[in-house]
Length: 133
Image (cartoon, rainbow, N blue to C red; front, side):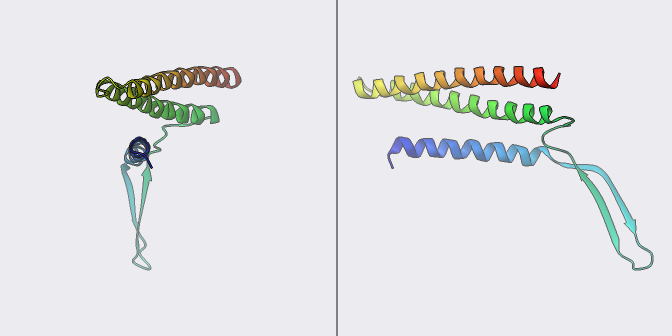
């Protein structure tokens, strides 16, 4: 595995772990708990409620919208990291035409991917609003 592929793998794993960590931290326990004691057996039970990390969802369109917004955040982070990586590669190319060409391809690919994902978001948003009202 080349050094570039390893770097991409590490960046993707960091982003995925960040997303899952933010979801797990978003659902903190609610402060309202109910403690009840059964007088015949002496057992104590507790009921606690958790907040939904996806927010208050009333329709499937809202669920899809929340998932798409989260994915758009991940896509934005990946695009920025790829642009920065391409810029660093360009700056450290030391005049090597091969590395300059690779850096330009990385930056161009990141920008094209970002534009495509933004257009996909606009289309999904339009369809959800048209179907859901």
